[in-house]
Length: 294
Length: 294
Image 1 (spheres, one colour):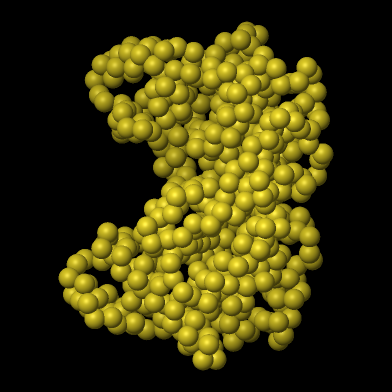
Image 2 (image 1 turned 90 degrees about the vertical axis):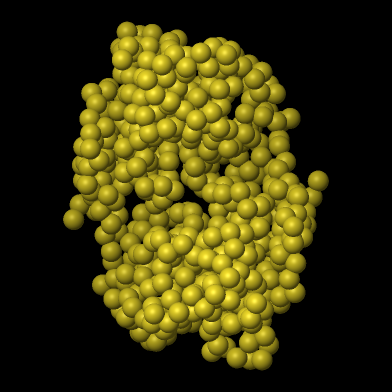
């Protein structure tokens, strides 16, 4: 297959923008030029790469070519930067990264902020889809994830653990747990849960009170808002140590033996890219400072 | 169609929990009892209501029956409460509500907190799916949304407007906008965008600098984290007045004429329920305090 950079870039821009018109605006060409490049790329690949819905949908074959397009784009931007060519399109490369919600709300943004001038981050909440699928399809080039198993073509590096503890406001603790987290109290006390896939609360709950226990539960599916809900007294919840210090109230720890460590990993494509290397170093350095090294 | 409360509750619990086993745990019966109730409900309805995948999937007919199940459950819980029966299953009713991300991160949780003991909230981020679809299918009973058009069977009440202003840290403003937000500066300055559907930044950008302008952009798809990214200096962004006061730094307003009001509406099912009424009152009262009444 003959590589044509303009065609690959048209594919990438169309998927990013969702439409041929958005891609045309991003690349400063006409929609018909985008359309021609996409057709030429499909002829070269011998396959349909995009379904022309609004927004466009990437086919299975399209995902492989898209992944290639983004790798080539990153490498091209690296070279342009080395050569001091800041005006080339893509001189500020975009790095799509999946990040689990609690990491995004705490240590990852400050880690990436110093690089904000040289790389654009395109963050994906890990909980929206499965991170391994995002890596495999090339939607993201790297991920901060609790999934240790490297996706084929990726490396996986342990970052450390995020520590969660069962906590509540003093009011909630007094009202619902006057005798501590007994099975009876846990069966009645409301619990705040992040979303349906979040089993952190239920692991501790079931360990203390048995699997038959179904307390009233509030679902608050945003990381900072989840901790706000615990701080506002909706119920108890598993709160990361990194977030507990940022809420206005002093939260009470319900069980000194109830801490849970969630290990986190950095997964990234095997790709020698100066930009990706710098982001990796920033993430690893921040993880070493902020996460538990159990 | 004969109504059977236990069957309807089995349907609701199965959809909430995702599996028959989870429904069985929630209702304190065996999975086989759940399975029998679902089958009986499907025979009564004359239609397949659930596809038995993991998690289960609701069919089109299933959605209508699910909506009925949740309405009946809420009304039953209302009556149980009126009769002083706190031990009945469902005595703490669960109210599924869709909330747009910025409202969830600011004024909605404090508004609902006083009701947390009498109603469990099951919040859905509006940006995850279309709110009207969530209302229509019965996944949520109410919504805080920028969508004014009432879904069939729902009422729509204007809550007020959320005001956004183009802002940046003093450092970002100095570095990228030494002469203010000129078209040239806006073409080069990095912008922070919430997600691909978020066009707030681009509306102001295109009004000031033309539609051909494509600055470097960072995507940060969580509301509190979005404002953090602006406060950390990733770039400029449209920041709600309600959130600007919570960040550690004093943000600079880039354009006194750049404010955008996003109107918000309360949509809910037409249903006389004391619980739903109380939640509605709490939301409307908080909106009157917190939102702009333009």
